[in-house]
Image (cartoon, rainbow, N blue to C red; front, side, top):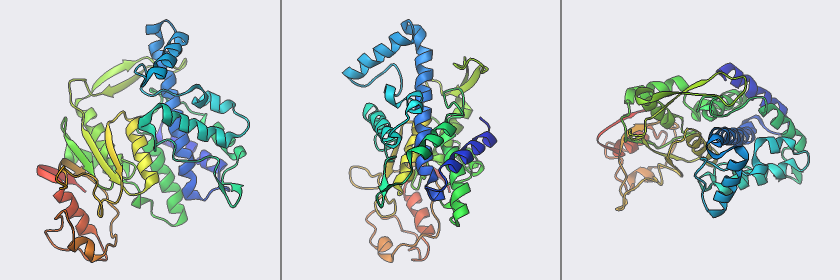
Length: 359
């Protein structure tokens, strides 16, 4: 899927829920459904791919059911219950809001790493006694999202990050807000990753990680440099074969760490890491007041690389800087009107002796 197709698709998705929702809220409903569809399509791909090893899809699905009753599944990365698979959702004609809410919660129960990630939205929520988004609007949204397959070989891995950037750019700025507060343009993120040139096994940190895009671009840069290409036959009848690039098993992946203050954006960062098959430690919280990554003595952990685009010109009281237990502000107290110098000193304090950062 090229970027123009993606943007047209997202625009159509937003248009079908225009009216019930304010524009900046579009992403809160669209992105979790894209994530669910991605998980469902990838599950179908994995089942098709592994079915040959186990004598057919029916046998494999039976084995998966047995495996999940004993504990975590190993035959596929994420187990998607039958009623939460996209085709089942598409067939649902009544009580759709409750059905979707139950579906994402079921996915989170089956896959504990997705708890607090996919199940953040109540599609059945009300305000002043009325549904925020009706079943009719949800059904229309599902039909639009069904136009494109999001399986292993259909879209670039960063589909969710690209969708997030587009929805912010299109609708946050349309409401007089700055989308630049929430995301870094892709080209800038790619440049920062190339400047940092991550090496295998490095610890990479973003103290204001947003949707995780800068961290993921460091991962993608390592894959670009050291990955091996594989030809994989597509599961789609009319699709050509795909070429994917992965890190060989003997190369250590990056160790990814991030902190984000906004709960909805934090959830998207974790979704983004899942889609990229990255083991990432993303934590929710206020980095300036309560940095999440500390050692056993309570000091700041340090990292090999830092990549960040924090929200500039934030205002913090002088007491934050003067009474800092982490000794971050050794090079001068920032003014209350702008925390820029504070952010830079937090990052400097979070670098190890040979560390580098791109901001």
